[in-house]
Length: 445
Image: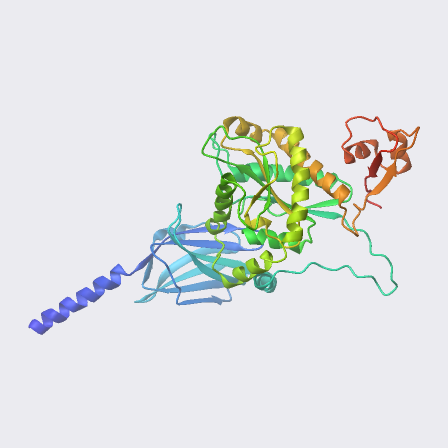
């Protein structure tokens, strides 16, 4: 009898320990980006799946987890991206089976995220379309090399190309960035400004924009770099809206990468906030491939940082003509998005969204366009003096002679008077003998 009681107590104790060790899948969130679909499971503790595998006819992803249970919230999620539905049921007494119903075959990548200020433990599944998987794996293992334009056998000169300007609207998706007192979200404001800048660049002879993010979805910080490199970008501009605990802080700033850390307390604070977004958005910084990418991206930065500083100085000059800047000189900080080893990269904090007056300006479409124009002026000034070989921006120059007029020079070189004036940042049509004008490129040149 005593043995029976002891055995029963032991069985209850074991069952109690098993119940205490059960992980609960509390919720699931889906988000679709152009190249993948992200599935985030909120869990009561860290989760290590026993099995993750795919099935066909129809396409499904199966996740088996030991000692786990699921809430009803998992099955009520709406379809998004590659995922059309979620099911959860017990596969056996000790295993929970979660099934993601898919539109098409997909390749998964799973990893865990530790708790932060907003969320607890999370199991993340990134689903890539099968046709894109090879490219994804290649990009995660090594930094893609820029294409080299080679001469043909006939030794004909290579066709001139447009400058590629990569425009990065910060944050996106679940990562809304900073917020103003009126509820203005940084992710929305910077996307609007980025679109304005892209439209201006598109109209500029010899330039072509590439939007890193053109919708309300999250893009990992290193994914932003890789996308710019995939398009062989000549310049990377990341656009943000600043925030600070003092509402009086105001003005725009321009940052370049500092390998020794931020140049001021403000810069260090901002760098920590922006870099933390990588983890908040779901990119695993502990992943082996990401670490390899980071090491590669940290190499050979000196020349790129020098070029970035020159671009930033021109950009800051354009912003100064628009209004007050927070700092009179280019700042340095350790932003991850500035770590491309071969693309001049700058980060523009357009204004302080935490300042009520500047928040109102940031919401104004006319002011957004003014900011975009100021950035374009900086881009134009830099590349006018530093045109990359093989591009339409290899500037033609003309030295002003006695009797020349701006309209005649424009006519001779077959460019518009407005483009000639804007390309040289002229406030009037008055010329001085001996001045050197830069002739803007044309689409056919």
